[in-house]
Image (cartoon, rainbow, N blue to C red; front, side, top):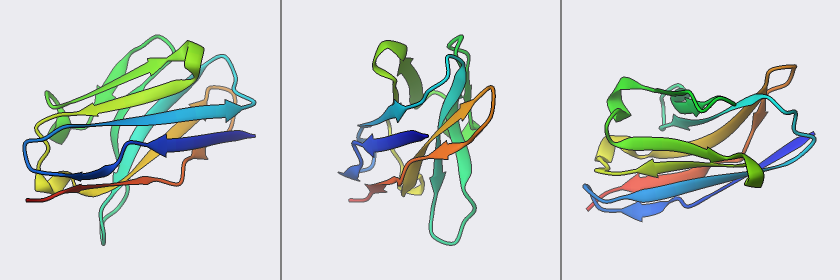
Length: 116
């Protein structure tokens, strides 16, 4: 089993920044994709950004140029640096880990609120 614990959410003003962290523990295979998803009230969960074992990244168009995903394999941690935050970025952000072999793991989520 794999456990994911997110941290770093909170309240920030429009234009501000936050950095989310996700620590993975447990039986983690050598190759996996880690990502951040978000889900706003009444909306479907969407992929925000992902990074694979070769550090190839993928972003949803709405965050390109503002968010940066990175991973520290030695620490089994993935980060999401969020800059120039907008009210529409307000969501619960979920960490996800998908091993190349099998499985799909989720954290419990951390709330990000962008408001003045």
